[in-house]
Image (cartoon, helix red, strand yellow):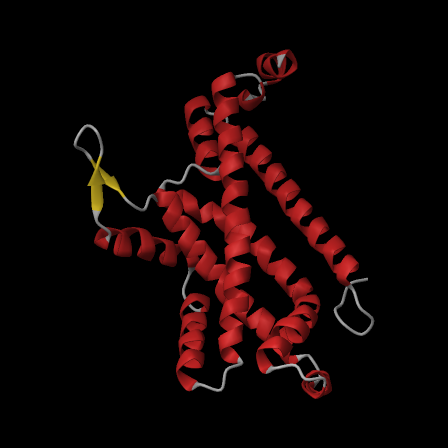
Length: 246
């Protein structure tokens, strides 16, 4: 801490997050919220993608049309507009409760709306990723599972999903990295994630240049962690003839 204080006094590089307890706590909390937001959205979007792509395999027009409409809507509109739509549009329709002081309290807060919007946004891309993975499976594999007595549901769960998952991992990795970067849009509705608290810190201390560099380094590290983890997962799940892991 003394080093960074001296760095500010002698060199003019004001990194308050390393010597000011208040700024440090704000920055750590923002980093924590960013990681939590990303992890929950990542899991929710993957589950949503798998669930929705299962509907595309059904021989019914209505569920397939619903999934295609969902994918078209969220892939063809900006994620920031989607966040505004959920927070200001649908948020105005959600009833509020009263706290102990009689003040209105939203039943769904800004973090929840960011979570919903980002999960749906990333989930739409995951649907297409998993659909492409399923379509890459040769029909002879499905026929072999049917010949062994697998039902359509069992074939999908125990044969198609594991193979499609391996094939889809490289594209899924790219989408999760994009989701991590997109979490910065939660700033627009007041979620105190990393960009939001960094903005507060550089506004209070007039150290924009220093904080922007710190912010860039932190996001590079976060993206690097996700990329390395996904690449190792690809290598662990690699099967001869499936996926593109090296």
